[in-house]
Amino acid sequence: MASPEDTPDITIVEEDSWAKKANSGILAATGIETAIAVSIYDHGQKLALLGHFMSHTALRGFDKSFSRMRQDATNNFDPQKSHVWIGGGLLIDPNIPAERGHFSPDTARELNAETVSFRLDILQKVRDEMGFGYDDHNMSINWLYKPSSIDYSLDAETGVSTQIVYPRHY
Image (cartoon, rainbow, N blue to C red):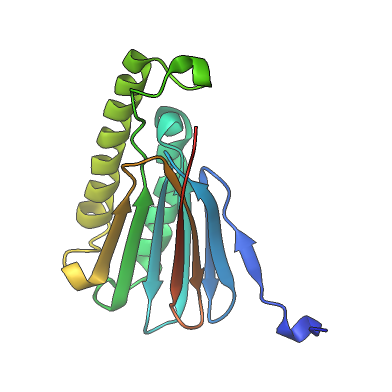
């Protein structure tokens, strides 16, 4: 039986929020589909940050939440010693029939246009406004194009991240 000392400190980052850990613990986001997750890990400080943002609520809550995360990252992370991961942003297949509980083709295309715009907005904010990810070995991107979902975690002590991408069947 595991002792309390062996139990990892895990923070689940819910949609439209972010969290930070230093030196130990794990940040995790689950069910990343049309949402977009952004993680930053500073190897020098053993500092981890993970945000999980809904693309379809971008106009309502994204700017406020992302602005606070951006401010924290800009003040506390060194872009030269940090690795950035961005993932999610699933594009919806407009050919999945609406009667299967999905979107009409026109709605799917509208949502996809919004998601692509959101992807570009995230990249622009991370690169231009925060100064991260200009060196290709310091940035990883995993956009979703087929019905799937990502569960993502980042260990604040080691910087090791885990991505589990699994198919979604509608």
